[in-house]
Image (cartoon, rainbow, N blue to C red; front, side, top):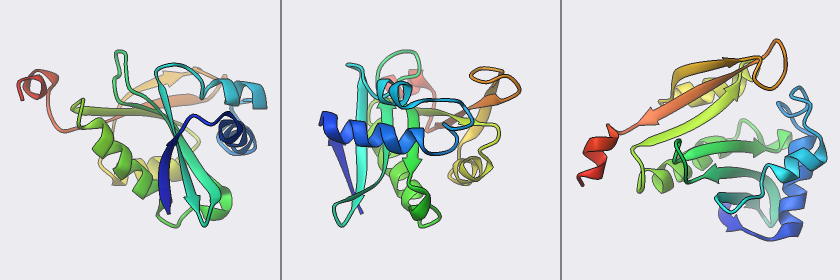
Length: 156
């Protein structure tokens, strides 16, 4: 497994297609255009996961703003889930984010129980719930993993 930062528009388009054909984005009614658009922006970092040159997943980080160190999306191909790729990807991002912030944030859809189970297992805690945030009747659960308070982190 290899994790690489990409800005290649063709690869980002391929990631958008994977996203638009996967849960939870199907339930959240995200079409191909909105999935592609979600990966673009000057403050976003798109990392791809490949095995034998095949795209098997990707993630989008938001490294500025109030929730500096926000994992916006993690997508693993259904055929490659439950193989530890998500855990490795999270560990990679935690190492990246904890260099600049004591907190990692992410949201998980209330119905995405397999992903939530992984996040809780890896030490993430629920810090809030956004009811009816994207789709009526569904919530987005705000999660946080921390290594300390911002004030202490900034003194290092």
